[in-house]
Length: 160
Image (cartoon, rainbow, N blue to C red):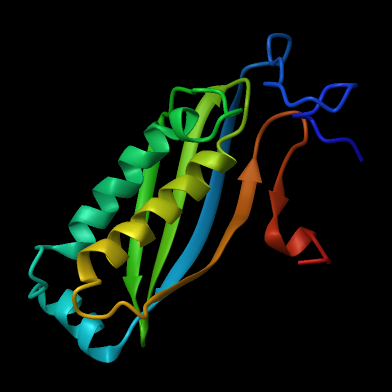
């Protein structure tokens, strides 16, 4: 297996996508933040001092997906056709799930992962005055479709 972001000498470089076909591409990623019951209740009630944590985290994640090419050094800036970010409040956790889509020459996995990461970091930032012991974990790609490599889901990888 070769890493696409390394040239024949081992130097990092941006992958040349000039000859790749434009296809519809989509990726979904997920992650979660573990938090205490009082913090979760404050978020649920909308009583966190910094405001509506869920609304701000959703917007932050969507904005981050749009700026992934600026944040990850070798990522191509791509025009996104859709970004959704769902935040589900559970028992002691909030799960973030992002789906990004484009019609382009490269995939949107990094955009989905970035959206989830920034949404969860925003929740941490907005609630840290209540609990600095929150834990962000399990950020991973769940599925991708389109492009030369085709479709992939997390269940397709027996090592993970």
